[in-house]
Image 1 (cartoon, rainbow over the protein chains, first blue to last red):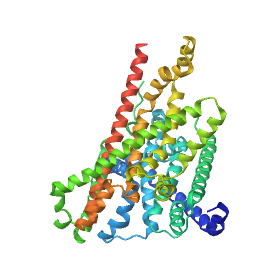
Image 2: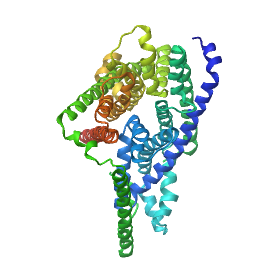
Image 3: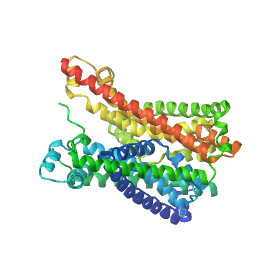
Image 4: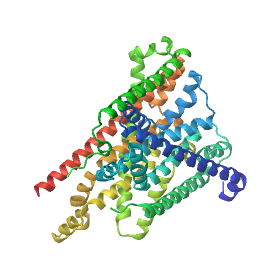
Length: 219
Length: 277
């Protein structure tokens, strides 16, 4: 099938799929960063059970394959009388897995902060949560822009999990298998999706590089 | 000079009042986590998921042998895929570093392409398109090849950062000794570069291993696919998927631990050399 024929027949669907991928990526990334920050705070807080929980959480979701997690959410949870719609299942999977990696990036971002800063903050009488909020988190975020950029690309790639369940509208990977089972889209159908993924990744990369130049802490 | 980890400097030795507060919150946190665990266990009990019919077959050797066969396929696909990714990544890295601008542009484009496209898309390509071209591939290769392709760009970039991390003086010294470019690269630069990137190569193995969980799309009998067969045999979905997920997590966890160990070891070795020099 030629590219023009493919686009006239499925152009709208591709556009919807692109927006679906963008939406999933944006929501997942936002959720992953929020949960990643919370988990990171748990991992450095003085309450040891919470530290253990935080580390356990990260190890589980860092190491579970996306397919396995999605299958558990979609097919296994209903046996526990917990049923989520497909879209929510995908969203949960694409939040939980990147959130573990986000916490790892933040931990190594934190380790770039000089201990003297924390001692100074304590000398000024700041409480633990003030130190975390005012000193540690801002610097950890600023020095982890590039890893976070890579995380956002990885999150985008993870959203292809959405092709494993019936989503409406489909995302960019699902649309390709849809087209190829309906009519012989051939290589072109793949090329369009791949190009859209790549352009999105390049855009995220460029944006991340720009933000990094703005906020990077020069030491 | 060794800087302390950030977790250790965030708070100083607590006084009696803080200690009491920490103890209180520790107990509260324990209660909270215990409550969470109890809620999960209760949900399992209420829905009857602890019934022996869902678990008895894990006491059978055949179950584990069958899962083990799947695991061997999974590990095989991950290892072969990683090895292929390493080979292709190496070629891409060489192409990107070498002088010829056309080749450099092509390799850069290929690296960005494989890094920006999800593995699933490659898998669907091998599942839907490749059979139509007359290229006969077994199920094993239909999962291994796309995983390798999807990983090779990342490997190429990792190798390139390793090559860039080798000090310039090494190259200059070798050139002044009369080394040719090829010999220089394989004898001097690459052996040092590979040491920098071994941890990230092991981490890449984890990513390939995770990607192989999609093997059931191309009906390759990996761990996940064999789990599905077990599920239809015993009509026990939750318990089997849960056990399989734990197996995956444990394997990847151990690989990540290995990667950290190797990273520390190589770092320690490097500084020892510098001290000796």
